[in-house]
Amino acid sequence: AGGRRRVRYPEPALAARAARVLRDNDTGAVITAAPRLYPHMWSWDAAFISIGLARLDVQRAIAELDTLFAAQWRNGMVPHIVFTENDAYFPGPDRWGTDEALDGPRHVRTSGICQPPVHAIAVRRVLDIARRSGPDDRIDAERFARRIWPKLYAWHRWLVEYRTPGSSGLVAIVHGWESGMDNSPRWDVPYDGVHPGAALPPYVRKDLRNVGDPGERPTDREYDRYLWLIEEMRRAGYDQRKIVANSSFLVGDVFITALFAMSCDVLIELGEEFGQDTDELHDLADWAAKARDAVAASCHSVSGMARDRDLRTNRWLDTQTIAGFSPLLCGGAPDDVQLRLLSLLDSDRWSGHPDLLAPVPPSVSPMRPGFNPRQYWRGPQWPVIVWLFTWAFERRGWHERARHLRDGGIRLTEDGSFGEYFQPFTGEPLGSTEQSWTAAVVLDWLC
Ligand code: 9WN
Image: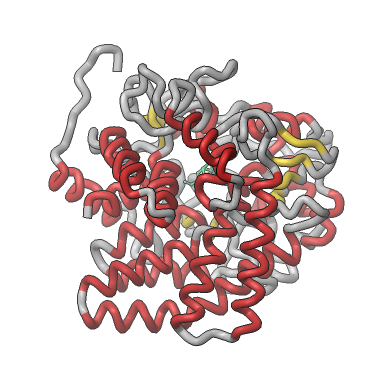
């Protein structure tokens, strides 16, 4: 940054550093999402982490996903946080107050919302890596895939039964945290409809202690809304039907819907291989088709970008962010729309912006008013999102594009900081460093 030279580790040294981050963040029970800022297990982080772990130790990768799914709620929801004993993160389990929730797990404390369904993708990747690594790993990973399949199916079924309300076919979220892109401008309009009441219990943020500059994190105003939504859910006793009917935030999330379609495809492949029930395979095919249709139907007639939908006001949300490229992940959009999106992605509005250090898409276009290169989901580049695009492009047969993005991802992360997110022009690491999922995706790219 600021003209200082950025360190560039050669690939073998970078891989060794990434492995070290995962080992250092291992409490023995879980790999925390980050050492200080996030001292617990997060749902979608754990999925990516397991992919990185598979390169080091297949058993450990399996254990990580088993730990997450041991916290699955009885209704099928995979919770967004599985808490460790550490109390350095807010909101912790007492604030969530899920202990009394009817559907909650009994032996472990969790939050009361979910995160994007990327777990089937992780299981597939772990299995593929294990098969190449040797006969013992292969046997273990196959047993694991067979045993976790019904849990993955139950998780997907929960998303359909409880979280696909109305006719848009989009998978809905009831909190920005569920999207994994917490303060993305995608959610600004729906959050305007969230009015924290006087009954919001006081609280003290802990996240700001662990970042260089508070401007890298969401604002206090945003936090009041995040906490208010938790308050509403607590009052509803974490009853999903009540939450979806009444919460002041309900948005069809197009990015989650695309991930869901891809995860259903993967689950079908695994199910066919391991002889799962045909009715369940049909369900998954039906869910994947509907999710893809919903993503395609959301595309803006001029830009082609996919859109979220505010399900409280029944309006499309036109804010353009990285999520607009969702149809490139899951496919299903008409050819002309797909071509428009590909050329937009390559253009100077996105990955082709001349000032980017690494040619990978930022969370928000640098040309967009309100773009903030340092603030969280409002501009920085996120390696884990880049990984999702590399994975999806590979799967779609776009090998050259996938390789190009992977090279960009390495360029972004080769300073060895394993930043949570990066300033797109300088490559300065922001948020946490030694972030586990960043280390994990780098390992996957390098091996
Ligand atoms: C709230 C752990 C998580 C990621 C999310 C990211 C951030 C948490 C926070 O960190 O969210 O869940 O406190 O900011 O936005 O995607 O899973 O890495």
